[in-house]
Length: 121
Image 1 (cartoon, rainbow, N blue to C red):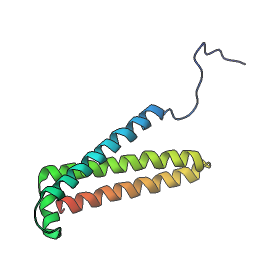
Image 2 (cartoon, helix red, strand yellow):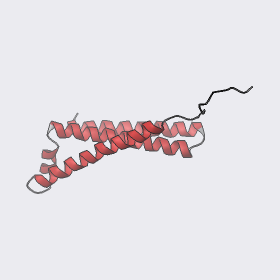
Image 3 (cartoon, one colour):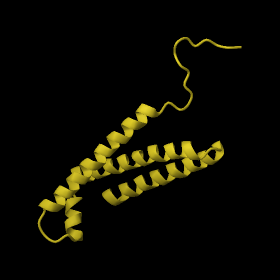
Image 4 (cartoon, rainbow, N blue to C red):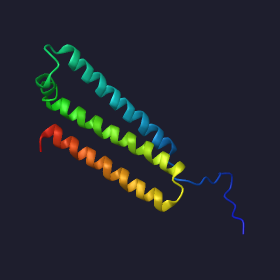
């Protein structure tokens, strides 16, 4: 039995297109902003580039927050990219689910480690 859907075309899939495109662009802008802020901090601070200088750069609360925001953006960017690759190449659903879980666990672990490093929990 045929069902008439009218003039709208029935599209199957996850419908992530525009949201993923926007997520990639926004996360890339956050990553670039962080990179520029870090380069500016390194270039405009005086003294040798050693542990003390790096610790001084990341001691300010705004830099810790910007760094963590960039880490979240990298995780988000990586998740969207990994999900797209897995949807394209991991055809068995069970295999794709295993890879999704591994990717999620890995990205959350990296985020937790970043919190520990930045705020010395």
